[in-house]
Image 1 (cartoon, rainbow, N blue to C red):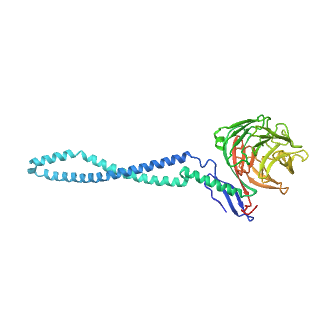
Image 2 (tube, rainbow, N blue to C red):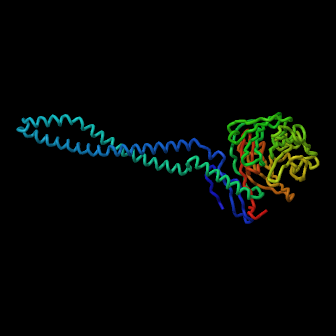
Image 3 (cartoon, one colour):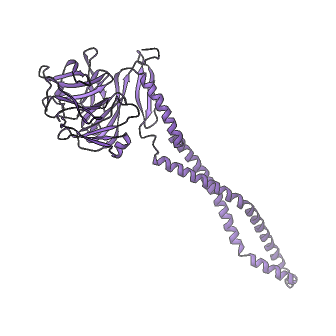
Length: 435
């Protein structure tokens, strides 16, 4: 079933039955769509001015209608007097009378009033035309308001809060699914170098919307924190962290309050706690290549890719034992011990950025303009398949692409642009009776 979305709205996730029929689609506005938009304010102010002008014109029209009728009557009388005067002038006997001379004098005094009366009539017509134009403009503005959905801001805010609650409730009933479509990107910000990473915590509560920002793929150990997405866009930092070790690559992840990253020039995974401000765990990934031995196609010391999905924390890397092909390992978040590993037959050096969704690894050729997801490996079935899911590489070079299970979105660093992609998954909806 096709779904028509308003401009600026996006599909967060969709559910289908076994026959491929759409059962439920979750849609929501962009994060900045419901802010007090300047154009909406200008439209509202213009609409209020038009209403005030319309009321003023109406009052002016009522006040002048009676005067206008009186002036029209006066004009008719003056023209009648002039006609009688011409008749009287033709009678020489009457010309000598005193009364006639007085009447002629009054007519002469009123004569300059005629152009004034003509101008008044013209102004009255203009008022009438202006009134009609105001009416037509009001109709146009009303149509624009309806098209833009120009609600009162407070009313709109309450509607958004209500819809967000319904959205979370609906999304909570969506089980793990298979990737079907990627849309976007939405450009959130343009900053930093060509390479970097930015992320939110998929394990955080809905009230915690902190953003972390890590510029460059090496020679840096400063993590910038922002309290919200709006602060991130505005560049308002809330805190910075200086890590004890430089990082390698751009494939870091924040998970349950900790930052996981690859220590520079090593195959060591570091867990750094934001709460304590120190490293709480570090462990080497046995046999994992590092320092551009098995990077993604674009290089940048992207040998070890740390990521998280609905099922937990993962590491994607390559080993000599697996002939440089990708190895997927699930990690225990606190100890960083490897819980299980899967050896694929796909070369790490031939892969672009990759990400995990519901235990399935999706590999892209994101370094290319015509990017797509073309390979997936399921850890549930230990099988792979070739896919063809386009992904718009808007700025021509993707150096970071990670899935966030809470937002059901892909965070990307696209040639110095921080972007978000929406994903559509094939889901099975849990009923309230399911455990």
